[in-house]
Amino acid sequence: MFSLEVGSLLKSRCKSCYHNEMQVIKIIPKEFTRRVAFVVWMQCPECGQNDNSLTQIR
Ligand SMILES: [Zn+2]
Image (cartoon, rainbow, N blue to C red; front, side, top):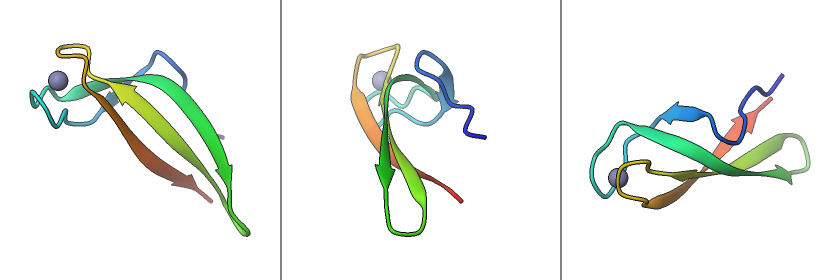
């Protein structure tokens, strides 16, 4: 089960200020032919920098 939720903190490094936690602000499911992935939008709580990453689950 995919347990990521909007508002939770992820261990991910901010590309702007190098803070080591990012807050999840949006999760967008993406379906491929064989697997489901999510685009996770994150925001740095320190500097407000937005980032996104494609997270894949089996
Ligand atoms: Zn930052």
